[in-house]
Length: 297
Image (cartoon, rainbow, N blue to C red; front, side, top):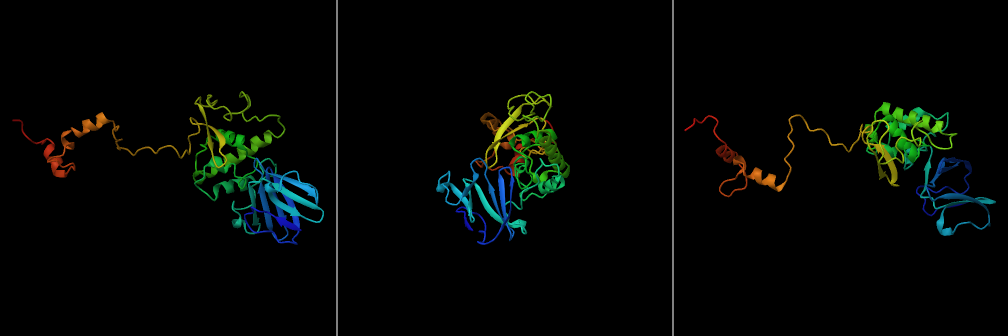
């Protein structure tokens, strides 16, 4: 056997080890050797695996090679995969994403409780929940459309930090996602809100009114891949980390720093400095303030 992976992140499989299994989850593919080493590739939008007989001409140029595994009669070649990494199954913390892929919510036997735990124990508590839902090490099956629809269905802001998400919200996210994904396995088109025009609550409806609260649906590109996220600011404000905190009781907001306002403030008796000194002192303020106990002349 020969193994070639010019951009591999992680240890290289030892020559002579036996491949025990190959599994795929969407655009992820894992190859497991008998010593526990796992090769993980994520195809995203550009990658693909090809299988050739030894000596057969490849359909893509060698410069696009990311992995080549050759045995006696066959060679498996991965082209243009953005992610090529290895980790050992018996030590999940050696994997950059902290472990193997999460349960596939499309499967009826998927462990939903494990998905909830992976959300609550996420390695980066500051990551936004909208990005966590696309993390295949948390759950599999939730794509760009469903993350927007699921977050809307539970009324949670996509900008909430995963570390601040409650156990109940995490459970609602997982169970809602599983329900919507499974309900659409046999449909020709995705429907998350029956009776809604187009079948979707927010995805692809930027600038339109929300069917639940009537506010305007917004869109933004977020995350490493800059994928489109749709949400309703009106009914999905819960947990939004971008909302400024409410000032404490009795706190006065500063006046608008307009030039006219600044001039007005500078002319107030208790704001004027004396003897050319621009620094106000307690004595200066006391001298300029009227004496409330003085008798009229």
